[in-house]
Each structure stands twice: as structure tokens, then as C-alpha cells.
Image 1 (tube, rainbow, N blue to C red):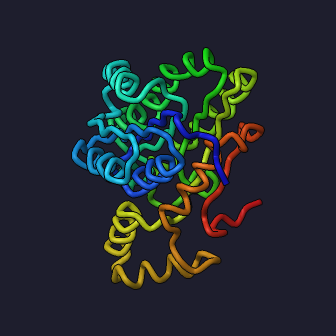
Image 2: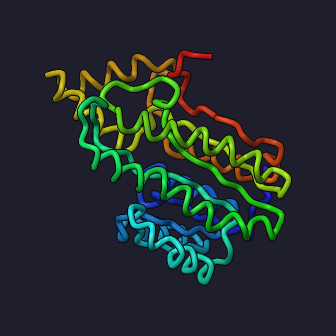
Length: 261
């Protein structure tokens, strides 16, 4: 299926990581120019180099999402390198494991800025030009924890849940301008982040990492962790011309993990 996004420009936040890198790769395979943004500049550049070596157009940008003052300059760098952003993939890094009770307020503020305010600020920066062109995609990656809170991921459960209400509200505000806004929920996708969480849980519960991982996999109906490219393919579809009538939605890519309807 031709997704109809060849020649479009995509900005993928968290593009140096497993999920963000895979999303950018799939979009590039569909002919989009991709800007990979990540706090780890070398990782972002590696993602971009992989696309360029395959004949695509890409740029890697070192971008600390906690620095809201850098938004305009970094978006201009994307525009100068690849053109105005048509597809924005809001994919932020996960915060450290934590309970919600008694957490220092400064920690809440720090992660709220990097995980929520940054997404809002970047979207505010690129949407006006999407409106001018009458076409755009805003896709926000969150977590299964926004539907079924994950124990000891209090920061993530709370902050990512706020993006659901924001995206749904934004979808109604820009739908008539040809812009769709959707949220994608990853279940347990086999990336370094999920391996880190498995190690942390194993240490917390006094189990081996192998036992913890096996128990985690056993709770997933498909009996395995997802592959980053499987998640990325769903994101790419939401960026497509075929998905023009899909907006304000929450799409689960979780192997059946979330039990609620």
C-alpha cells in the first residue's frame, strides 16, 4: 500500500531510541524526509545516517525536550534542512520508575516540562504551517499505563494521561484544517526501555531478570514482546492519506495486553 506521504517531512521526537528510530525508518521507507530529534545527539545522527545510507533524506538533531527555549530554533533547523513539518511524532523518553506519593515537586515539574509542555510547545510551533497547507498529522506516543496504570510507574501514568485529553481536544480544533491528531499506546515493545524496566522490577522484587521477563511475556496474549517495526507501522498508517478520517482516536499496539474494553 502506498501511504501517500512521499515528499512529506516528518519530525520524530525520541528518534534515537528503539521506538522513535523505528518510526522514522518506516516513514523514510515510505518516501518521507525524516528529522530524528533526541537528547542523545549521536543516537539521532545514527538514525539519520541509516536512512541516508538507504537513499533517503534525513537529519539528526540533538534536542533536549526539557529546554522549551530551543523549540523554535530546532524546528527552523528541520524546516531549513527538509522543509516544513507535515508529520509530527510526539515520542518522549520515559521517566524513572516511581510511586506517586511523596515524590518531590521539582521532579514532577521537571518531567512535566520535558514530557508534556515540550509536546504542546512543538505542536503549537508546527500546526500553523500545517493549517496553511491544509494537511498535517500529529501523532502522540504515550503508554498502556494511561489506560491501565502500571505499578511503580507513577510519573509516566500521570503525565502521559494528560496528553490524551490534550490530543482529543486538539483533534476537534484542527480537524477542519485537514489535520488529524491521534494517540498510539505501546504495550511491551522490545526496546532498551522495556529491558530497563524488567531489570528494575527484578531488582525490586528479588527475582532474576529472566524470571521477570518470562512472567511479563506470559501476561501478553500473543506471548511475546512487540517488535519496534510493528509499532512503527501503525504510526505510519496514521500518518497516511488513507487515515484522513481517523482523528481523535487512541490506538493500542499491545498484543492484547490491556484487558479493558
